[in-house]
Length: 379
Figure 1 (tube, helix red, strand yellow):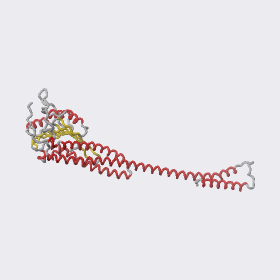
Figure 2 (tube, one colour; figure 1 turned 180 degrees about the vertical axis):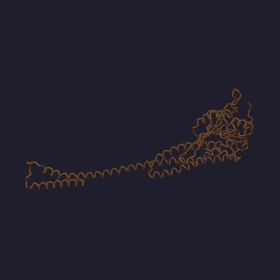
Figure 3 (cartoon, one colour; figure 1 turned 135 degrees about the vertical axis):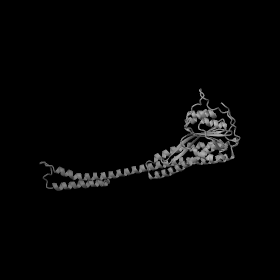
Figure 4 (cartoon, helix red, strand yellow; figure 1 turned 90 degrees about the vertical axis):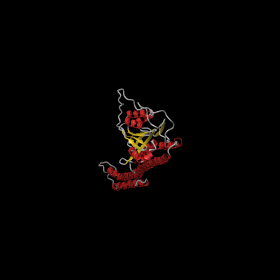
């Protein structure tokens, strides 16, 4: 297989720490001479650029490799969406990508990070977008390989929209001409800009939650918990990005980064720092709202218990009154029942003063019971 005919870029770059070993050749042909089979359905776009302008749109990875080798001072930009293992192994063989970075790109679910493997920079980003209908945050994962003359993006989610990034870069060839590091800047800028609608959506959610908390909505606790979990994920996406960008800025002098790119990256770093601070504020606000909601729920429960206690007390007072009057009315009934028995031999039955005595006895018992219950506040 023929050797590469690539000429190293003469521009200054912050991505190149030191000259590394020559990269590997494209995947070797099969035993029968046919190229290895690679499922390329995940290739979103593959293009070759020179001096900031697209000079080729190959139809396959192998064609992209050949076109890149044929163009002096060119750059390949390959965009993939959830690629297969065969595609990544083909790219690793062609561009000498480290096996650990390939494993990360295959498995996904990585934390945001920035690592250098020889001449290649491997960047993991967590993009986010706000979904209006369900009012939730959707996170995507993006892996970027940046080398001396290539950029490979591997998406594991709907966000970010890299077609818009490519269109923007192609519309500004003077920026694209700065090389792979300019593409990396554009990707970082798109990811960070994508955080702005999320921040606005979350702020609106928090305002709604505050209203629901003071309105006593019973479902608000669940919403606070779900949004808090999303903010944890959002924080994991933004906080490491601050350190990554500051690490890139720290290498400006060492790797001779273009001054225009320095200004762009500083702007991105300012935006992501602001976003990270907003996310921290959201988490703190949600914690406070959850505490306020717990306090309000406790107060509501106490009020309900107090109302139940008062109702029980009032009920007890009514029961006492009913019981007192029942006892008072029972006394004459008892006396009348005793003297109403039809026995022949019964004391006082034929007594002349028997009737007045019975009435007097009833009155005395009733008055006595009334005074007793009145003294005990039963009446």
